[in-house]
Image 1 (cartoon, rainbow, N blue to C red):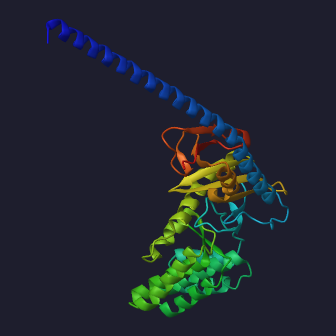
Image 2: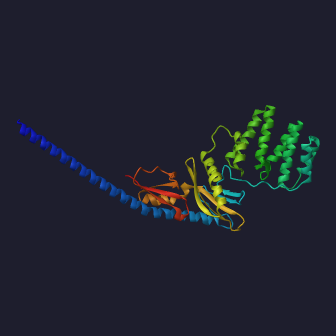
Length: 362
């Protein structure tokens, strides 16, 4: 091959290579343009869909608010919902799904009882015989709280005197006072839980492990069954008596969300809507003044319940959902894809959160 022929061949190959690059670049550019157009169309579709879904969320919260507004507080609740009555200081009443613990519990009011005052003074002075006699007398009170305090004092002084058998009997009587509360370290604690704990301590001191285990099991059952309205401090006080089986993480997450996140919001505004999440368990709440006007009512339920109808709508529109907080952190739902999703604020329906949507890939 001559030098001229080789030059022509190289030139032709170079032109062919350049043309190939241009064709590839044009195809890539067209693909990018079509992909961007497709994504833009998807986002527009998702934005329109979000309005329908937000309407379903709003309607469900409206239903909850209507439930919270009932004068008799006996209306239906959302599945797994908790209805609470509270004032600015403490939880007053609970109905529905009980919490593991609550933000604040009202300190029991103690009616003046001179017999109880004298017995307490004698105990402080170290006169156990006089204190025991005084507590026995005060324990006949018809007022719930003084009677419980006196019975607790009787058990304590009998034990200090070395009379374990009568002390156990006094604590057994205290255990029957289901509605009584005893103020310990500034926290009102249910009388039965206090009684079980004291009886267990006596049995352990006596070396009766079987009897001590029965008392521990009673505390365990009461905490897991959420039989009493207690605050976090009381729960943690009695929690060492829980057995080896882990306490429900979801129940603890809900109680923590209500105590840490929702309670300050309830106290900061007379009415509202909000979401809170802990450990993959998210809850929604509405709250408002009670019909009487002196207290407030709130409903708390899992976000799964709130979103049930919204999910049905999303499914019919081939869409998947998630909820994010105002900072974009996911608090409920699946993890969205890296692209092709839309984020829509829910401020128009009273929630400081965002709705994340994306199309289901077939």
